[in-house]
Each structure stands twice: as C-alpha cells, then as structure tokens.
Image (cartoon, rainbow, N blue to C red; front, side, top):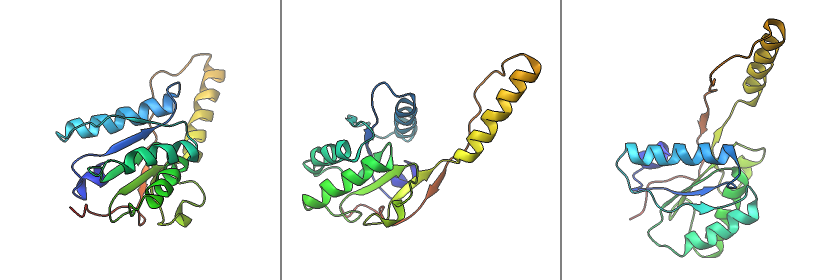
Length: 164
C-alpha cells in the first residue's frame, strides 16, 4: 500500500478475499488504515474469492474506471486475474495501472509483468506456532496475545508512477 502511494498514486483500489475469511478481513483493515493515515480517499472494495477468475471479474470492473491507477489484490491469484482483465481491455500494467499482490506465490516472478507482492514468512509462522503449542502442552496454559510475523515487499515490475 505505502509502496503504491509513495509512487504517487492518489489512492488504491482493493480486491479483497471472501467475506468469511479472517485473512481477507485483516488485509482489508491494513489497506483501509494506510489510506486513512495518509489522508487518502478510500474507494469501494471490489469483492473476490481468492481465485484468479474472481480477480479477472474484478479487473474487468476496475478497467472500466479510468481514474483507477493502482490496485492491491489480497492474493497473487486474484492479482493475476486483474492483470489479465486489464490487459484484455487495453489498460497496461504498470504504465496505466500498477498492481500489487500478496503471498509471493511460486511463479509470481513469471507473471507478465513480474508481480510486485507481499511475502509472508510461513516457515517462521510455523516455528512460532509450534513453540506456542509446546509451551501450552508443557505448562498447561495458553499463551496470550497475538504475535505478528513481519511481511516483506518483493519489488518486481508491476508498479510504476501514475502516467497522469
């Protein structure tokens, strides 16, 4: 999000995951909070369901709005669909619309253009989860609180400054 704003985009359209998903909720909250903290307009969320086909449908809607210059998709599969829909409708990525995904799936570097995305360290999430489980078993009590594992931005070629 901040990466897109730092490139000069006034706001960012969000393609979120399914309504029943905690991950989708958290990613939407992060998107919204960054825009509000930076004093930016918060556009309507475009719904998706984690699939490339839902990203494609979202991208078709987004392509119809010439004011959209940046898209943040809640996962790379939906980002792939968005990129395809934009391409088929004559909107170039990143020259006309920048796109950022989430998850850094295998092959994200082979999208056309290679996808800028957020990488989560799932191995570290697993290590911390096992550590908490072992503590719970050994001590007979649950650990409290939420432990966040930092994510990193993987910059590739799907982001550029807006052309207008």
